[in-house]
Length: 268
Image (tube, rainbow, N blue to C red; front, side, top):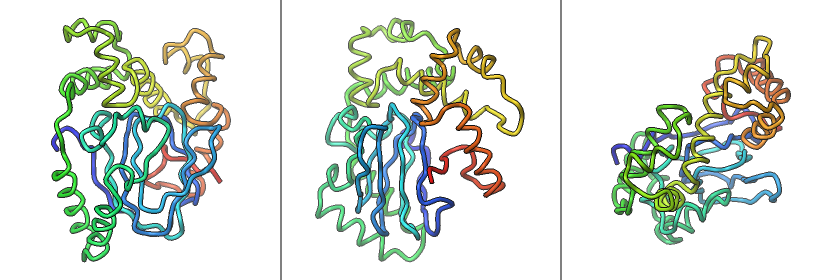
């Protein structure tokens, strides 16, 4: 499990907003839902889908919308980009921008049993221990995982600035093999992962309380064409740069010092 998971969490109560907008960030997740169904709209051209038992989400390529019930109750896992694959019965690319229910990946009866045991647990700590035990039980070997983890870590350390062509050479693997393993394990190519890290670093570094020179931001992110930067900004966040600042300012105004400040964003 070491090196696969960022954190496990328990969520209970009333969310700051019923609908939240999440970025195309390199952060796969798994949620086991214990409350009323929640709603997901993955991408801009798809309809909202109801998820009763939870969901598994690999690294997305577009911003996506998550609708919480009120109140909400769930346990979940934030994975490293490569961390969800050892718990999936299918290549990660099959879930790219198409979240699966937990039932689809683990089976109806087994998920029903897991949810029942989680419901009976006496405290959040016990629930997280049960979830961790389930993950350990389901952990399976994945071909190329060490390679993808090594190369992805290099991408993360440089915030997406490392030349992708150099990664395969350093790993003594062909670009075709590397791209295939990335899509099977992370769901996207190394180039796309680098873009995701670059945008995550760029967007989260913005100080929305101060004036922003978008030309300088675009140049610092490696873009010589500001129009291209704005297009990718909207693809990544679901918002134009100006609208993003307005929404971030709204969150800070309505929920000062909230732990979710930055991401996700209110979609109401």
